[in-house]
Length: 217
Image (spheres, rainbow, N blue to C red):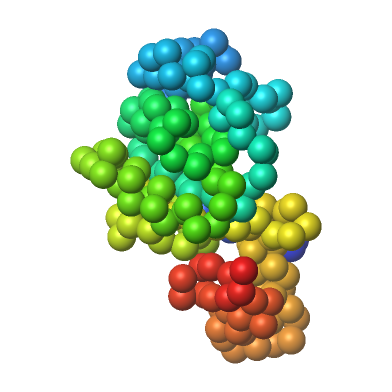
């Protein structure tokens, strides 16, 4: 029996998530432990150049002091969990040297296990790739995970980008929901190649399924 569409979408969205194993549970048992881990390498930059926004159920979020709040795209920084404090410190130190508008980090141990555990937002789309180049140099040597269904900046998956939907929906949530819908439609129609059918339909939705980027911005 096929999975319900919403369940399938969730499974696709969570592809690449690390298991929340006993080691992570011991290391990050509560919010205080997660905070200490994430901020362990930040120094004064996080307090000086950023103000923390209200938490959401899944994220801790910061905005750069003095920014307009406009968001035009996002860069995923997918270092392995062990390197997350270093990556957060690098991002926090760039508030005055780049056009980073905000960033967010998984709020708990489960959030740090997700591949998109650190997401950086820019106020202008043209800043995405220069920021990627800058971060690539600053994070050289950090092992990478990679975020599925995003457009690669680096071949190892450490850095990739996306632009959320005009409706405000997350790019990855929207894309994986559409993919699940098309896979269900393929099965219902008796298509022999449901994956090919679904990818073709995603193309009609405006997705470049080679780069996992919008065809038009």
